[in-house]
Figure 1: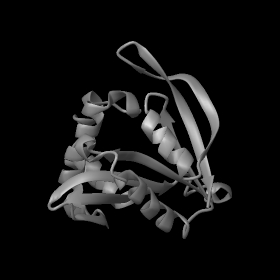
Figure 2: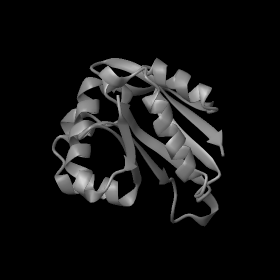
Figure 3: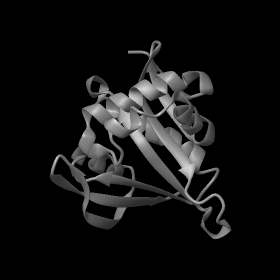
Figure 4: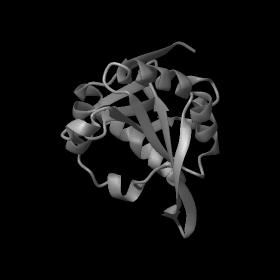
Length: 165
């Protein structure tokens, strides 16, 4: 399996849109937004994400099979520009368990270390595998919102994690 990792460009926005919608549909308990909401967004919305954040992707040939999003949490608040955020991490199910998400996170670290001192993320208690990976990468839990997500009447805690860079 020869995989290629690179930052996405505006030309990749349609492919990113398709992967993001697949993630929301496949794992509704792992993301704050829903397929129903984001599937109504225009391509321009996804172009904005690619243009205004660092979206890193992993490709198997021409197929985008995973991605991560990094941004500075409060770019207009000088006292808080030391904090970055990871969001929208996803690897297609058939590629999970092969170290791809870890490699995506290592790429996030490379970018984040030049721009901030702390890296934050939020995930839901339904995503046990991701929680274990983030712990292994040095993140620690610093907060938990009980019942922070409701999917089809089932509740999941929202877990906040941080890593000092």
